[in-house]
Image 1 (cartoon, one colour):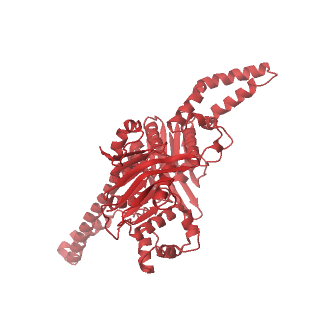
Image 2 (cartoon, rainbow, N blue to C red; image 1 turned 45 degrees about the vertical axis):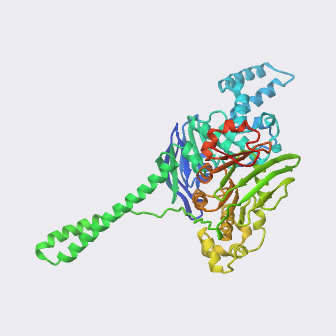
Length: 545
């Protein structure tokens, strides 16, 4: 058990949390949710002891071990991968190193023998002999090949490091597990593995995530942060949403009835207060009126942008033809003989672990890279708008947001442009913010504004949900569903893939293509069979599922 008792945290004069009382109990997975800036990550730091409170304290059951997903991706660069994972249980790792040091002594004394015996006993109690195999199982489950287990952390790429740090947090069956955005930089296979791990995990999990599908799969309760308070709801994310909306509707309905009663009482008092025969009744109603209190309904701190992609031109039947397209990057063939055609109703999700292949393919389609072999052709009625995974070059300038977006607009009117920015929560003086000072989430919202103002009928997204809060992801999801044109996209957000795509393409590690007209969930059901095939089709026409 871990609980926060009267926890208050002030930053300057602002109270981020005020008298928070909440208890987390065994057997539950808690999704900690709230708007950007509500204090989700800060609250995890309070629970883990990394941050001191202004008032109140955190109490944990004595003897329990707490594990945290490390956010510093370079902290363990000089350690082997397997050691980094085992260090998730620091006491076990310390015992292993002390034992090794004792046994390595040339002048082994009786005292060394006694100490080694004590360590061996504790080591056995902690299942130390299974430590390396347990760590390897976690790594393999998350997609870290065995050949990398003895490499130094600094030799791994960014996504591989994230997986190792996640394995480190999960290692050794911790009593309390704190996970801040554990699905960031994970491919969908790794996310699926993590979902199953947490579903079967018997202890306490407190997780911050912007992935709605993930929260729905793993959470038994939702802890909602709003206006410095934390309210617990039983159930997963969807249940929280329905419950919170129902509560607001009930409070509004209760207030409506109270307002009707107030009006009725006021009319009676006004009518009969001067009437001697009715004076007692009027006095009684005055007392009743004084007792009626309307429920305070605070507007949520959450803000939803309005994302609406409207093409300026209807798309024709000929959209995109790709034939025998191949590309090699740094000696590795990431695209091998890709062939397919797109129709005017296609919304295609590119899935799988081959991140470089997907990004490379998108860059070829928008003209940023040239294929080594093969070719592609866009239909004459198509116009494309691209959301790159790395958009940093767009922000390396001294322009204001308004001036930058005006450059992509056919209508060079500041009021018109500010309308698009307003939809994306850039209100008032935000329009004169400099591009180079924007946060990650603000940059993403700028790029989405650019895509909306373009009026394109083909949208290409490469991981658009990175840096977005839950509200913005929901708005983007709705905008993609409503869009009447063609979409090609990659996303780690399961719900976006499932609700948007009607066609799934997977570029395998060998660069070959699997192409199916199906939903994502249906594709996953047949994934094992699909993976056995090297090339799904030779003519670029997917089979119907």
